Length: 472
Image (tube, rainbow, N blue to C red):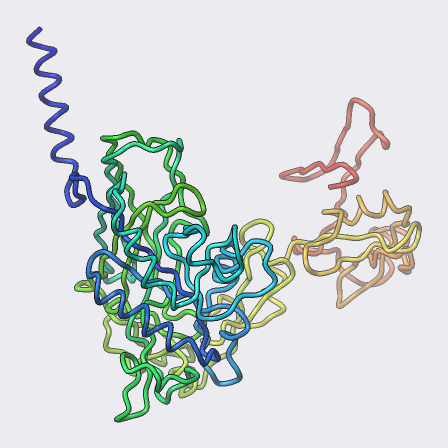
């Protein structure tokens, strides 16, 4: 009996110490206002004013996520691009299923439909409301009991890694069996100088008449848990859950610098992709973060990771330095090669000094049959149906043939080479046999019988054999 009591005591102590920053007391629901907006929307500064008014009136209970998407958010040449499409676009149209249009500004309040009054923009079954409706429906959410509390801690460190810790505590029960946890990263204080936002001067919160600037706030930058969140399978009353997420911060998103000192985490729990139960927010602590900076070093723009580089943005460095062209693989079928593409990163830090070397290293050979008995060609982008030339030729009925190309014997893949086999090419053309792995498609081995039924014999000098059927 003493052992049982001791075990129970230890378990209770563990539970108490595990809950570090989430409240375990029942609370009312908090509001997540997702506002759809755009720089070419003349009415949107009014939406920004409305959401900021509600935010200021409900400190700690209402949180705003501004999502720039749609045609009114599409920038003209030289204008900032605040979108994170297709994520933003998907979020927008999920709120108006089956609708053909939506007027900006529009917003969802906890992704909930509030009955007959007020009516969503696109009618019953949708969730986007006009800005004039927000003040009347926000109190409806704030007056309801929440079955779940959310706590957040977050920081950005010297390695430009954002770490977010989430704690969830269920204070009540639900009729559903699973929930979704959503973790959004928003950025505040994005200055437009000069102002780009259409009709921005109408918003006295964000417009500064002394210098003609407009400051965008609450702008969605990233969803750490994906488009619709991470599933939570245990949601019974008294359940405590801890989660941690990390994100290596890029210097910018679509050219908009990502500043950890102005980042905010908004986390919320929903029943599914709709019906947000409650949430919370936390400003990111950037005490250990080192601002990116760049120096021109050996024909490349390098961040010294000390915060004291000569240039405050990589583009400034690129514009000012004589950058040496370099090349990188894009990352393709095998995780290294690039689905046919080698690209110049533009900052001199690529792994290859010329495109040809990059392609030889990165792009796996593949072959496609252009027609029965006609030819087998390498499309150059790893998209061919056959991983080897011999497999393609056998399937397509193209004869082996060889010719001398740049001092080496190669099979053109169309049966029109000057020599019927590799030996004849080497002996009669003065060319060498292929030596690099990139241009070896036939080697001096004998393989029989062909076709094979139950036993295949391979004679010759080789270190490894990969066997494919005719379809790869």
